[in-house]
Length: 169
Image (tube, helix red, strand yellow):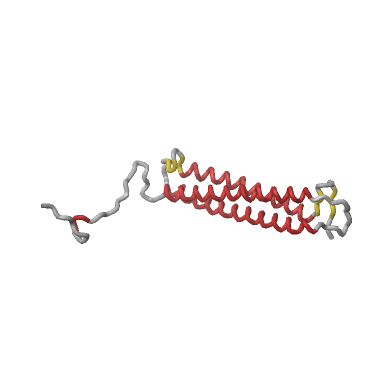
């Protein structure tokens, strides 16, 4: 007759083992790269949301119509919109900093893996690292452009509704 083994029976101890695959790397590089790529995806989604938010603020600024343009006039509604625009710009800067960190880490991971074996589908760590570098360079350029535009919007009280410029005192 068979008997049910007890939990303390040493012959029936379950040990979890990882199933190895042909593309499995022993250093865990592919897992780290996948984690970084998903973080990058999240940062890029946040970038799109903040960019759209900043665009809405710029549209709100252009919707303000000034009927009188005097040297000492600065619309009161503009202050809160400009503060929100600055917050969005700061958020974009934080995203650029985050992508820079991921970029540096991916470059280091590319140096750790000497071969060009694919880690995510057919992409090697080097190819992913080069692509993230290009994304980072693009984000830096766009962030600089947005900083310049925001600085001009803040330093000059723009009345886009009537296409006149009023300088706040």
